[in-house]
Image (tube, rainbow, N blue to C red):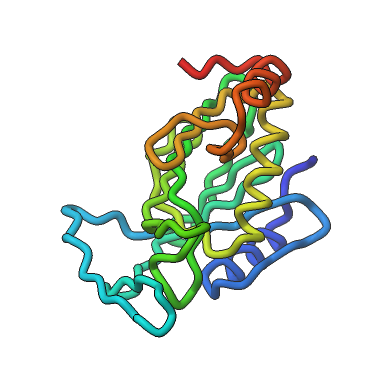
Length: 189
């Protein structure tokens, strides 16, 4: 995949900031970058008993930029300036995944378990950035990108719910996990 055009980056940026699902012909994922909190406040939660869901009562997050991920490049937009990082065996990716959120809720349900809005992603020498994964479709795109990066031997370190994982899958059996590790040349520890 070649570099993204400035027009496509601008469209991805607008969609990410508005919370829209953006799917051009190319495989790419645009995630809003959140303002990092200096000191995390304890979550103020309330329960909506009719729905049986837990909603976060904190103010909406502030966006400081957009992270655009493709199979071959990562683009970081901060203050209107784009930074580009080619992805290769020399560019490690570190992902601390906390699930996807909806635009209306800062906590959502994944199965029966509530998921906190605390996903962080680091590409190469860039800082570890808090990003918002808003939709199940974004999660599926992220899995497709992870699979492509593993196939290209980009060093990826995934953590989900505090545990090391492969392709965001915590519920894999031992045999399936071993097969993925062998296929992609992954050492978990």
